[in-house]
Image (cartoon, rainbow, N blue to C red; front, side):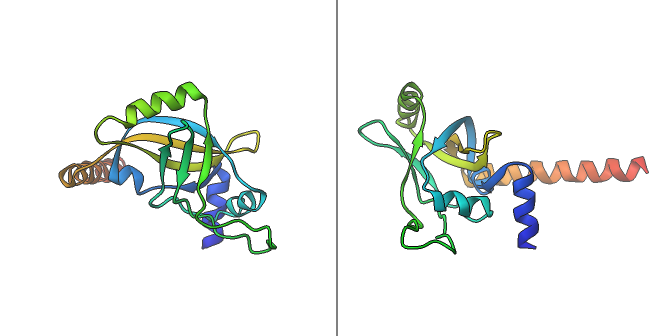
Length: 162
């Protein structure tokens, strides 16, 4: 079963997906960024391991973008040069984009959340970041009601078309 999940993610290019992010946050804008990885991290990600749950981004005083709390487990066949599981990783974006994101995140309630790690067509690992605003409990309930209504409508049309 786990191998099926790995193959499914590899088929559409996604290595790791943060499904909880769209549940907890309202996505306002999406951005693409490169990520600075070591060799063993790339091997682990290509195997379909790793997690974005609880991950977030910060921009430091030197205007560098950092990815925090991403879990990439150590490589099984790694040696003494293996990587740390929860190290902070630098994200690569143009300076103008970083400054624009910094100005937006300083507004009340906005944060940068990684949505997924994926392979681009050239084989590089990229991060899809989202500028997000946290949802309140009633917003989550409203989203769930809307999703449930859409499912019911699809079931009804499927049953009617037979």
